[in-house]
Length: 477
Image (tube, rainbow, N blue to C red; front, side):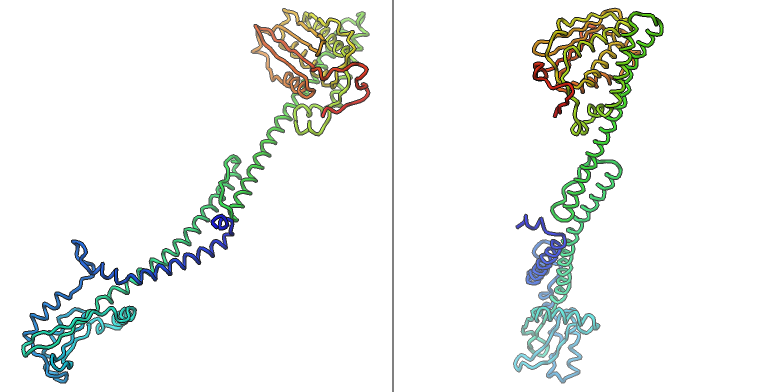
């Protein structure tokens, strides 16, 4: 039942609360009204060492009546005006809420009487007195009759106390105010809780508008405000995810631009080096080969620019999921040519190289990979060697093919690298490319030497007769 109430609308909850609170307060008022006599008894009885709030004058008034009656004569009849006027001081000794009447002891006829002064003072007091008397159906009267000795003999004295009527009106008003206040408090408590929820949602919205997308919106139940809180938290989470995605895209774009600049700079540097050699020695026997290498480098630059979108494939996973690598069967001779070309350029820039490739040129196996991506790997690695390697020691390059193609490059690290600005974008790009083509790269620094090892898995090896033709492409995913 309680679970069903949780899912009710606020309007329905409000209606049920008003109905339940109203019924409860009415029953409570009925209960308090039925307990009015117990309350009167408690407040008018000396139940503790303190005097009662409403004092009963029964004992005191009878003592006065007994003491004063012996000084007055009882009128012979109710028509004896002089006798009634003479006994009037005796009758007026009672308080405002007490009536006193004298009857003959033998004949029982009325002789004289005195009404409560509260009925005679003003109309308002008389109305309140009469109202209290009617609310109690006359039960507010307390009538006591006793024989009293007067100066001229005995007579019956009847004393009627109306003090209870002075209690029931304020008691009723206080009970009614208490029940109404309880009813209003219940309604206002419910409204106050909902208002606090609205204020909290307002604060959450202000926090979101100020850029705080990490503070979670607390649960607010299952009504309309609860649904609003859930949707607001979902919106916050969506905005936070979008913000993080935008930051990631921005970072990826920066890395993309840096990688483009880095990858294009490497072949341009090699091309410039060859052209400077041709310029310094135009009659060199190696001139045709240098020119051919220059042409190859221009082709590499053109291919890099044509496949510029492939860079996004490395730096943006969302792009990588929607674009394919251009996979072809690359022979071992292709890898050997790349290594020899870069080794020659290292020698031209002043490095000593030790190239050990065993019988790699004679291998007939092919490796399934992206040609442009492989060229980028070698460009970045050898560019790092030129930038960070020490020319005093030779760069050792090895390549072997057994169950996997393993290429290793080892160089001495410069001792003054503090003056060289490094973004590590080249190595980062190499690592991402190797990851995309499902190959491994291992980096190690030991005693001032830096070693890079490339390993192409056996799954990338296949006999020459089973390879995919170079003119065809195959999807990696």
